Image 1 (cartoon, rainbow, N blue to C red):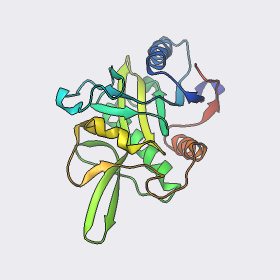
Image 2 (cartoon, rainbow, N blue to C red; image 1 turned 90 degrees about the horizontal axis):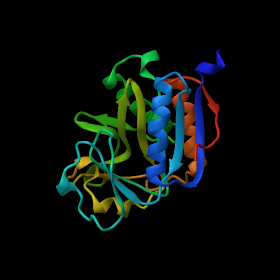
Image 3 (tube, one colour; image 1 turned 30 degrees about the horizontal axis):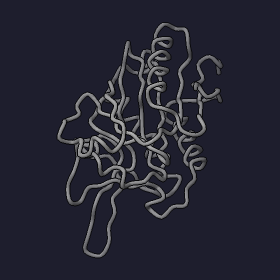
Image 4 (cartoon, rainbow, N blue to C red; image 1 turned 60 degrees about the vertical axis):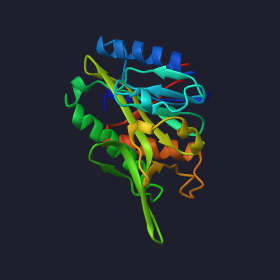
Amino acid sequence: MNDATVIEWAVSPGLTDYEPAVAFMEARATAIAEGQASELVWLLEHPPLYTAGVSAKAQDLLDASRFPVFCSGRGGQYTYHGPGQRVAYVMLDLRTRERDVTRFVADLERWIIGALERFNVKGEVRQGRVGVWVERKGAGWAREDKIAAIGVRLRKWVSFHGIAFNVEPDLEHFSGITPCGISGPNLGVTSLVDLGLPVTMADADAALRASFERVFGATKNAPSPL
């Protein structure tokens, strides 16, 4: 395999501020489009914040004073990022793959579902609800909780932004928004730890990387961008 075709895989320790991360992604996506940089998946955690995608509705920001709010060029609506949530920014060149946005989003969903399988969690997709969901049932009740969000942007067929995978975030922090514009008595958010699984961030990273390679191809270690 040509090493130049292997996707770089970087993990940043601690918390990474949102605005510098977006600035880096924009620059890297441009460099990839110009043939000056290789593809990259960048894993990190942000401090608590809300982001508004291009389809965000003002009424879905329920508490604007709670955390910083950033307007984002990604697809989707409002979402939360914070400690305990693994954000994976995906900078891939779709010109070397299929130039198919729908297929790309489906592949991102398959990636997350494959990672969940390593913890014996069945992730599912739902028509009209982008992301990955977990069905939960008890005596006389049933609900569906979102465990991972997806929001991407393409520029010159190079992707950036990506996924947000709930490992052990403070789920109460989601109450300041209507996550992804979806609400209902039987819909919510969850995490691996909320499901009763003692999963560390390192465990989640290993599962994400193994599943990513099955869907998108080989990876190689790269230094933290910031």
